[in-house]
Every structure is written in C-alpha cells, then in structure tokens.
Length: 150
Image (cartoon, rainbow, N blue to C red; front, top):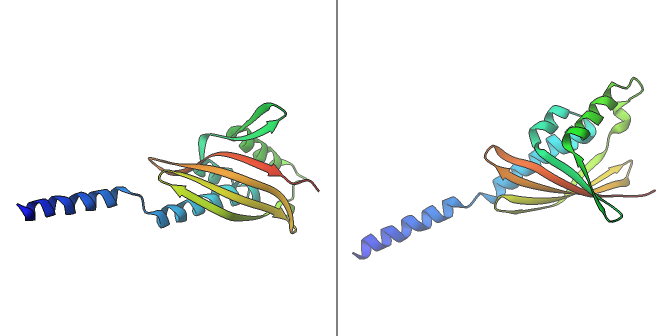
C-alpha cells in the first residue's frame, strides 16, 4: 500500500513538473523572435515576412495622445515599411539601428521585454513588448514605447 501511494505521488510530481514550461528554452525562443522579427524585421533588414512570422496578426503599437489611446496595427506598419523600401531615395544602410534587449521577464505563457533602440550611440526609443505563447509558439502581441527627443 505504501509503495502504491509512493508511486502515485512520484507520478503526480513528475506530471506536475513536466507541465511547467522550460524557462530557459522560453527565453531563448523569445529572444530569437525579438531579434529576427523585431530587430531585423522592423528595423534593420526591414524584413516584413519576418515580421509576419513573429508578430501576432492582431498586434498593435499603443501610444498616448493626450487622453486618447492611439492604436497602430501591424498591417499599417508593414505597409509603411514596404512603401519606404520602394522609395528610390531610400538607403537601407542609413536606417540601421542598434537594438538591445535590456530585460526579459517570463511568467508561464506571458512575457515582457524592455528594448533600447539607438542610432549612432544616441537613444531613439525605449520599447516595451508584450509577448504571448500560442499553439504555434511565442508571438509579439503589443508594444508601448517612449520616443527620446533630441
């Protein structure tokens, strides 16, 4: 009887432990998505296909405008990047930004990342990304930011 109870308890412990996500793997996955879809997709390589892979289709950038909440959807952002790349005067080498993950906090299927973006050593934006884990993996779900004035 004691051995059956011990076996049941051991089985429950193993099931319980295995039901928690592996934190290190999640952080690695999230960092990869941020680097590919956000740093390279949205800023440096302007790879809109990478953005579509790493951003949730309902993603939006949220901003404060007085008392109003502004919402800038991912489709609008992608169309703007594609239009910018078609401009004959556009020089991709001048658009390069230094992007750095300052902090990453993961709790279960939710994560928050603080990102610093600078150009030529001068801070341009501090971004806060919210990520969620879906059936097909982590996706960037929302962004709020602070633009630095110079």
